[in-house]
Length: 122
Image 1 (cartoon, rainbow, N blue to C red):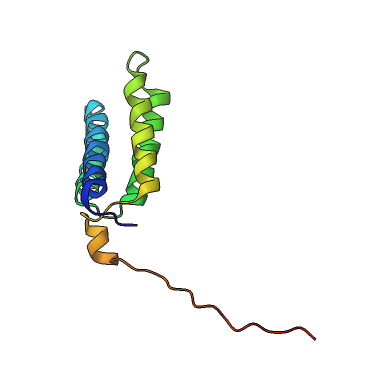
Image 2 (cartoon, helix red, strand yellow):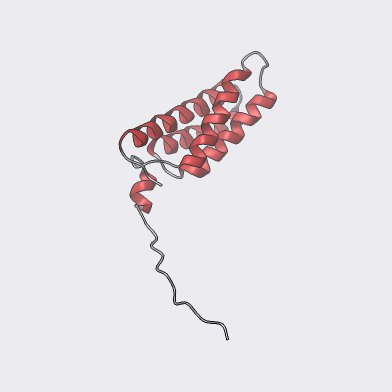
């Protein structure tokens, strides 16, 4: 769940990339007062993604925002929105990695299943 070493660093870079894309997409719509609250939420989500707090949930939110930008945004730059959907979906499925707040909060837990007693049927 929380890989270390090279895969952990790769997940850190993926978290930073998804956070940067989420923030830049939110900044492109910054022009009204009601949008400023949405931008503040995007900043909070981006910072949380960078430090690795609630990564799977925030990745799903970032993926939904990228899909909304893909459907509602301008046509010529759709490739960046498709890439951001793929990145956010991959991050949601892979998890935060060892270098995250989630790894510190939830730790490395391993569930060991012991074989149960066999019952004979009459």
